[in-house]
Length: 190
Image (cartoon, rainbow, N blue to C red; front, side, top):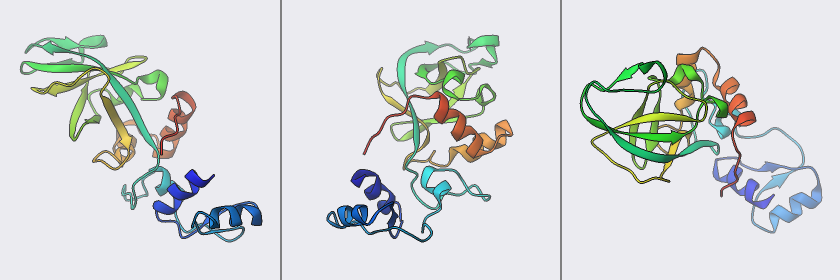
C-alpha cells in the first residue's frame, strides 16, 4: 500500500483516499497524506496515461507498455517485412524484432502508423503487427537484444502515444488501455 500511495502522491495527488483510519495512520507514519473521504485531487485517467480530450497529459503516467528487442538484422533497400509486405525499405537500414503484438493488445491497425521509444530515440513500427511481435525500423542505429522498448507511457516522448493510437484505430485511449491490460503481462515496478 505504501508503494502505491507514494506513486500516487508523487504524481500530484494531495492525499490518498483509503478505507480506514488505520490506513491513514499507517501512511502517515511514512509521511504520506491520506484520508477516508472526499474526492480525489488527481484525474485517474491522467494518472494512468489516458489522454484528455485535447490529447494532453498533465503528469507522467504511472502506466507504461513495454516490450523487448528480440533480435536485429539488416534490411536492404527494396526488401519488405512482415505479413503482406506492407512496408518496403526505401534505403538500407537495420530492423528490430520486438515483443508485443496483437495478442498483447497492440492493434493490427497500428502497423506502419505507430512509433516506439528505444533508449532516448523514437523509431517507427513498420509492416503489419503480428501475433506476438512487431518490426521496428532502426535506420542506421543498432540495439542489443533484450533492450527495453516503450510503446506508450512513462516519462519519455511517447507518454501520451495512446492519443495518436486512438486517431489511427478509431478506439478511445481508454478502450485500448483496457484491452492491453486484459491481454498483456502486468508487472509492478517502483
